[in-house]
Every structure is written in structure tokens, then in C-alpha cells.
Image 1 (cartoon, one colour):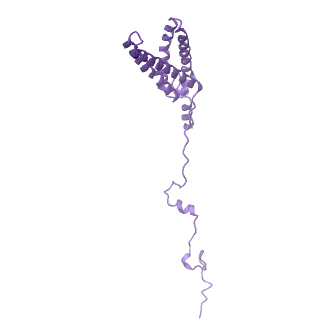
Image 2: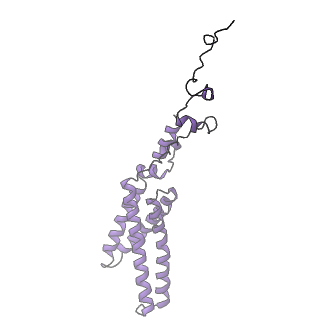
Image 3: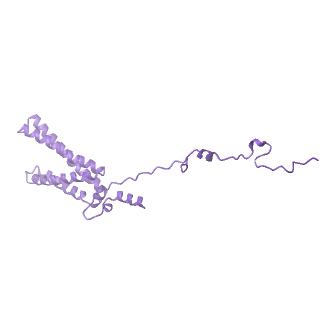
Length: 202
């Protein structure tokens, strides 16, 4: 008795003209096969980098830095001029002229460094800048009490010192430098930097 086994054969997905060698094989996308090589939770896609927020410098702070830098340059010019007079022997006391010139050049470093710090939004720079203006006011007063030649210089120095002081103590300047005022919270006075931290906390 002959049994017909053709009807009893089960049809297996993936089998056919290619034989039993390809039975049960599935074709996965190229991206899925590559992603299978990464550990759990890691994908082949790169995470976009966070672009740092650039803090904008207020105009008042820029003007203050310019005025402080001009004071430093004026001290350098006056110091070099006294040195030249002392070395050339045109001054009455050569040693005193040279000493005075060197002193002015060294003092010029204070406002110049302060101006650079203000432009870079460094909080420490406001202190030396304010000290420079406080020192400049008595000098301006002495120039006003001198002869007529020094009076214009005294007027200019006094106006520059007062204007720089007003700009340095302005609230917009202190916020940009991250300086905390009396009776205020830290986040209130730090300006853009505080806004950044508040956005991260949300």
C-alpha cells in the first residue's frame, strides 16, 4: 500500500526554490544590524553638543572699561615723559624725575589690568577700577588748584573719574559682573548667569 506523503508536508516559511538551507532566515535592515553591536541604551546616533550661551557685555560696562584704560594710558605717557626729562637732564632733580616716572608707569598697571578684566566680565576687576577713580579725584583737585596750565587737565581728569565711578556702580554693571549687592539674593544680582542656572533647574 503506497501513502501519499505530498499532502502531509508542512509548508515552512522561507523555504522554496532555495531549498532548506535558507529556512527560517529573516532579513533585517542595515541600520538595525549595526545598532545590534552597541550595548543596551547606547545608539549609533551622536548626541548634539550643547552650545554655551554667550553673555552679552552691557554698553555701560564697555564705556567704563574704556575710561579706565584711558586713565592707565595717561599714566604711562606721563611716566615716560618724566623719565625722558630725568634721563636727558632737563629736570631740576634727575633722580626725583626718574623715580616719579617709574612710579607712574607701575601705577598704570592697576587701571590697565582693571580695564582688561572689565572687558572680560571678571568680577574682581571692579575693585581696582573703583580704587583708581578714588585716587584720581584728589589728583584732579590738586591740578585745579595749580597754575592755569594744569587746570584743563584737572577738569578732564575729574570728569573722567566721576563718569567712570557712576558707570562702575550702576546696577547693570554689577549684574553683568556677577557682583552681589547688599540685601539682595545671589541669583538676583548675577544677571544672565543666574538666568542660565534657573533654566537648568526647570
